[in-house]
Image 1 (cartoon, helix red, strand yellow):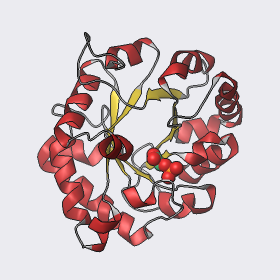
Image 2 (cartoon, protein in one colour):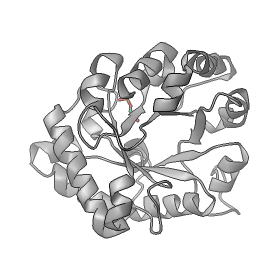
Image 3 (spheres, protein in one colour):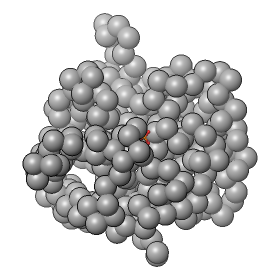
Image 4 (cartoon, helix red, strand yellow):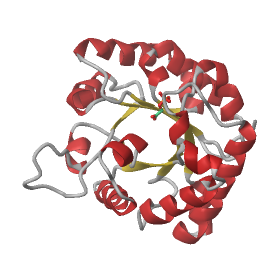
Length: 253
Ligand code: PGA
């Protein structure tokens, strides 16, 4: 497939990873040869505790790092929160916002996700804004409507094609081994790009990277990554194995 947008493959380590697991990032860096890095942008989003050290360990590898969430606030009395500026200070390029685990387990609303994405943009971080429907919503035929509403509510104002990534992650596909059909992914990604037009302007919307996420594995990556309007992957479980993460990245090249 000829790509006009350089794909991004980002690993979301979630709440996994201790110092010993810096070895995973080192193995990714070792395995990502020059042609792969030329063809695909790679990023690892470790837990906040590892971000600084992991970023430092990747200097010279051209593999970026990201946070998994950030506060909507710049600084102050928000115990336990991590600001966008802190992520930048630790070396991050990206931050995942609105992951379904945050939306579901922490009750984050579209408005909160948008505020976080705008806080990220204000610090020069690229937000990876996650959207996706639940199983019930898909079965009720509401997947497109749900995702469009999430986009209208959570995409930050003022983003450019280079400063925003959107990840479509059907909630029912995350960590389950289930994936939508390529036809369903194609329909959704086309709808997402169309919906971004009125929000960002058509030219910007045409260049925003749209990632697919949810049970991406080496065995299904080629099929999913060759769908039109799929510009890479947000990878959970498989990003904890360097070989699997690299195999997924190669499927995008
Ligand atoms: P998974 O997670 O690849 O383990 O399904 C994806 C994600 O939650 O970003």
